[in-house]
Amino acid sequence: MKEIDFIPQWYKDRQKKQVGYHTQYVVIIVIFAAIVLWSFGTCISVSKAKAQIKRIEASLAENAELADECNKLTTVLSRLRNKAQILDKLDHKTSIANVIAEISFLVPDNVILSKINIGLERFETPAPPANTSNVRLLRRGADAADAMPPQDSRFKVVLAGIAAGVEDVAALISALESSSYFCQVVPGFSRSSKVKDVTVTEFEISCYLANYVQDK
Image 1 (cartoon, rainbow, N blue to C red):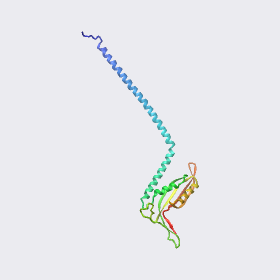
Image 2 (cartoon, rainbow, N blue to C red):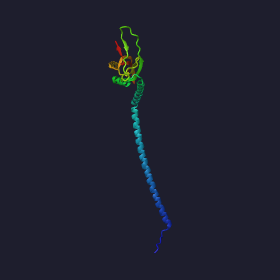
Image 3 (cartoon, one colour):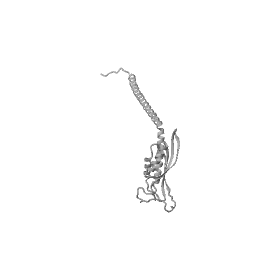
Image 4 (tube, one colour):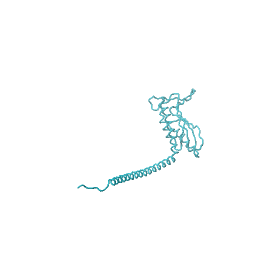
């Protein structure tokens, strides 16, 4: 027997369309929910990032002075390294690094150096009269680690900076005089000044590397 379908075709078509509409609605709702969740997660991530940026900015603001001091010290260190490289290229074979290390060891805790100048200075001695002492430079082999400078020159060291008090400057002068690296230590000047409403002592000291001796 042949089955007779009493449901009209237009009704079937409408049912199919409704099923398609329902499917589209479900897909749209799922996509919308995914967008909402993604937006919520993005907002949370942005909030965390903003909070972290604020913490970093606060930390940078607190350490701004320290960073400025570090930059100044880095600049000074770079200049000293450049000067050391220039001096090490000369034929005197004197270890500038050892000299700077000795200075760093001798400087008291309450003293901050702002300048270290190490340069060759022509060593001039007048013709000595009879029965008087004269100064001459001792020469060593070129392969010696601490060979002397050229015979007519010597190394002059100039230190400048600030100290907590005059007694700290005196302690530095005493340490330089006691060191086997330096001789003829002479204070240039010493005066009081203020740094951020704190009274300090500015100073300048000059001396020579003890790589020559005095014959008597």
